[in-house]
Each structure stands twice: as C-alpha cells, then as structure tokens.
Length: 508
Image (spheres, one colour):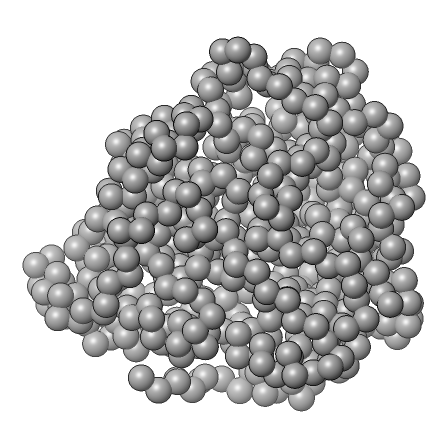
C-alpha cells in the first residue's frame, strides 16, 4: 500500500509561516524561560473537569498531587508523606506535607484536601467522579491528616490520587471559574492563557521544593502541526517538544543541535465509538456489534504502523500495553480480512455502503491516519467522511454525542483500572459512546476490590473477552513517547506516563 497524499497544503503553508508562531522577542530573549511545544491546546485548566493529555503536562508545573509515579511506576510521595490502610481495607489514612502554600498564599492542610476530594467526587461536571466512586466520605483527623472512608476495598485508590483526582486547588476559588485562573500548590503559578496559542506560568517562590526548579518562567505553546513544531525547536523558539512525529525522528537525531528521547507508553490510540449517546448513535454501526466487527476486520493495523509511523507504533487490539502484567498475550492482532468484513455486513443486513463520519484531530499525523483508515474500510463497504477539529472541540463533541467515530486515544495510567474502567463501565467518566454492559460493570467494579494480581487479571481477562466481541472502543496501536529537546537542555527524565516533569531541568 502506498503512502496517501495529504489533501491539504496546510503543513507546507504553516512551515512557510513558521515565524508567525514565534514567541514575542522579550520572552524569547529571557534566558530563564523554558518554552515547550504541545501538540494540542489543553482543555479547561480545572483538574476535576479536564481530560486532555497536554493539559496533564501543564498541570505538572501548576498543580501538585498527593502522590506521583516514579519511572518504574512506583508511587512516590508529593503532598502526601505517609499512608496506611486499616485492617479491613476500608479506611485510608494519609499524612500531609507541612508548610505547603497555595499560590494565593493560603495554607494547604487537611481541610483543604478534604474539600478537594469532595469536589472531585461530587461536582456534577467532574470527570473524576467515577475514579473516586468507592469513596464514602473524607474525615479530617488533625490539621495534617485525612482519613478516606471507602464503600469497598479499592486497589486503585492511591493510583487515582497520583493523577488529576489527587491535584489540590485552593478552596477559596471554588465559588468561581476555577479553570480560568487555577490556583494550586505547584512549583509554578498561573500567569495568563491565550487560547490556542500559549499558557504562561511563573515560578512560585514559596513552593516547598522551589530549589529543584531552575527556570523562572514556563511557556507552553500549542502548535498542532508537527513540521512547524520541529521548525520552531530548530530555530530556537522552543526548547523542547512532546510527541515528535515518527517521520521526523531520523532527521532530528541527525541534528547535532537537538536531542531525541524515547520511551514506551502506558496507553493506546484508537477510536471512540458512539453506541448510545444521542441520535447519531442510531445507525447499524452503533447498534449492531457485527458492523463494528466488520469495521475492525477491514483495518490493517500493521500497515498503519508501517505507513504512518515507520514501524515505531506497535499494533494492538487491547487497552493494556505489552509491558503490563494484565496484557493478554493470546489477543494477537489479526490480519486484515476484507472478505470477513463484507460477510459480517451482509449478515447485519447492510447492503449499500454504510455512511459514517469520523472525527480526527487537526494535525498532519491524524490526517494521514484518518485517510489510511478511510481507504481501508471503503474496500469492505464503509463510506467514511473525515471531520478535522481542534482537539478540545473534538472532546467536547464526543461528550455531547455529536459524533459516530472519533479518532482519539489514552495516555495510560499506572493502574490497569485507569485504562478501561472510565471507558467501558456504564457510568464511566469518559464513556462518551455510552457503551453499557452490566456484566462488564460488575467485573470491573469487582476488580477494584481485588489486590491479588493473578485474581485481578482473571476479572480483566473475562471483561476483555466480552469487549473483543462487542468493541466498546476500537484499538489500533500502542503509543510510545518521542520527545525532542535543544541539546542545551539537560536533566529531562523519561517516564512511561508521557509527562514532562520540570524538576531538575536546566539549560547548559
């Protein structure tokens, strides 16, 4: 199969206009400023309502969490310093770090931690509600100790608190628009945001670990075009970028002014499918699993890896990466079978080409990927049109049910629950397609209460068997993380969660 041509000249035009996305002269000249290129513009900067990968990168500088994960995926303390569970597993007691301040100068303490956890688990718009569904309540034991009361044992709790559910905001801001000017406890404080352009943070002098952060200012730039993003890095307008395109890796590695880094990821890329979210789900694709199966059989995942990603993105049909102990080795990626896809469509009563619309993100890689999938499934009897959108808008339309297929993925979590529970369970916070299966709900809820890895894997294996048949999410490939930095930047530590941690970064 030959590499398809992009139907737009967007990339070429954007490269020619690369200077347009350059930073203002004053900021570019500021030697204590670190400039990071992001592939998308984050959605809202409220950790309880946010869902974008790039938003999590920004939160790394802005909002401290109770816990973090080490490069080998072990929990490490941040705002929490000690933790223990009661003998019955239904109470988690967490000691908090002393002397921590929010960016507004107010003190972080047990009362503030309780307020944040209660907001995250009860706010109607919170995407953390399903992550914290096992919490029955939070008690303040003393000024620096909280006790989290659980409805059932929860093996996932601490890992949830190592991400957005464990980020702490100043309770004094809860009455307003938190995301407009977020006030956290992180090493950098919010300065300004220009939508689809930049987010600016300044160093917080009163941070408990301030000495570990060398830069006075962090500027995150949203540059969807991979070619333009790399051009800005080469010109010195950026110091580093996340998600270097696979097609640019060899070129960047040959550039002595740059450094290229790589690590396997925890997540996946694929498609969110609309099963029951509004009128656009009322198609054979949303209502008949045979049609979804046909779509999957029509895709050659190995060719996608070869053509779009130069053999750097391993194909997959499941939510767990090969490095996970919950990965099912028997779920091999099947070869493409157009004849089987056509037979399944006939069996489902689909005789004419089935029209579907697939949302893609407005960057060249997703455009090419969308075109490859579009051409593949056409041979089986699908007539797919592509709708290119800015990523935050794409996620908004997913939530509102304004889609049939959406080409998105997930960066992955250190606990396997984070890769499937929010997407497969009926009330999952990120189940935009409204897929529902009571057996899946029970299996994944039960798995949260199981601490033994082998026993827990049995539950996930059973859930995956059902999912392979019903396809709540269509998986395409595992997501590795490629970064490029200026050769002058040192101290960057790779993590499989894909986050850019600012501590220890320096300019030589």
